[in-house]
Amino acid sequence: MGINFGYIRVSTKEQNLDRQYEAIKGYVSDEKYIYSDKASGKDVEREGFQNMLKAIRKGDTLYIKSVDRLGRNKELTKGYLEHFKKEGIRVKIIDLPTTMQEVPAGQEWAIDMINNIIIEVYTAIAEKEREDIKQRQREGIDVAKAKGKHLGRPVLELPKEWTKLYKQWKAGKITAVAFMDAIEMKKATFYKKVKEYEAAL
Image 1 (cartoon, rainbow, N blue to C red):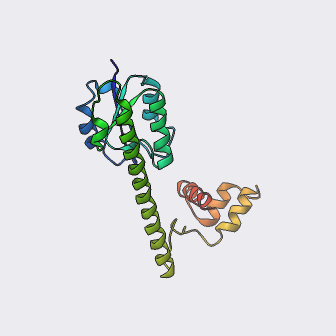
Image 2: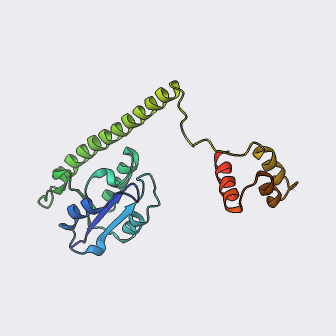
Image 3: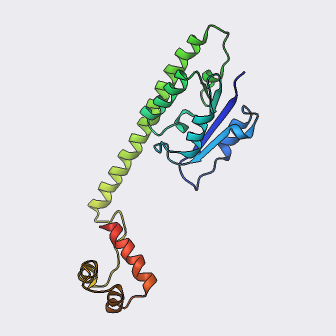
């Protein structure tokens, strides 16, 4: 008898896992087998996901709320699904009822065939939606640029002599203290501006 595992994920730390957790907990009796991440689906080093991969074994079942919780794009998602299939791990996707069905012994091929078709269509749709979002973002950026709006990092407000003094400081011609004195800036503000300036280079 295999173990029921669950995996839940949101893309950012600000998002909440509760909705997915509520959907999963009815199928996974022991909470220690529910793994979670607050990370992008493109991040293959997701800690919770990696720990789940180490723990899950042949004959176990993995429950997820939706197929896009596994990965951010079609290729990643399909790769993980193929890995689980190869390892003998059943994946049940709550948002895809067909994957939740039990089948008589010896007829697993039928559910696999249906699931593969559904997963292929689902991941293709999810990827198309992401491409549409990117396209809208690109169009929005183009419109904003046409109107002369500044995009990207905010323009740094730096003293007029900053660039010249920064180069001298980096070349070892003046000290940081001399640099701060010349632009009348306190130490904390100075190093904050240096960090912002270097990030923008």
